[in-house]
Image 1 (cartoon, rainbow, N blue to C red):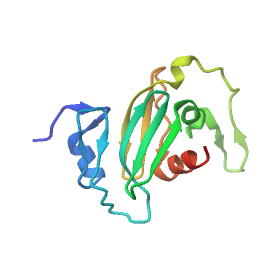
Image 2: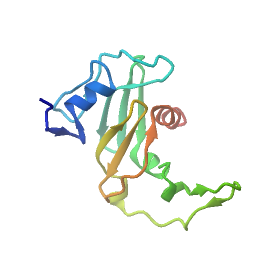
Image 3: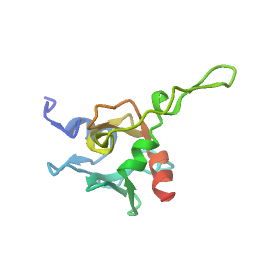
Length: 141
């Protein structure tokens, strides 16, 4: 039977399905044995918020730290970045000021085998950060 308990929005069975050998540690982190089904994609072996940063240990053993404010401001969702129509025109609403709770990490869910979707304390949860995009954000710091 599938475990119904959720851990940071990711159940044990889902973590194991998306990251071979992964397990929820019960300490608000995700650990993996580092094996990857898709060798070309850098995958996180451990993800956890620490203070005002997101700490990511990658399956190659490297570590990245991304400021939560930077992560939220780089949210790739259409509401934050806009959408391009079939003619190539960008449609974006005005930039709205973000409250301090917009930069507080609440939880995340894994999306397929390619990314994670954070839920922020202000309720925003529509951005899906691919693992490659997370790595690029971290490397740009």
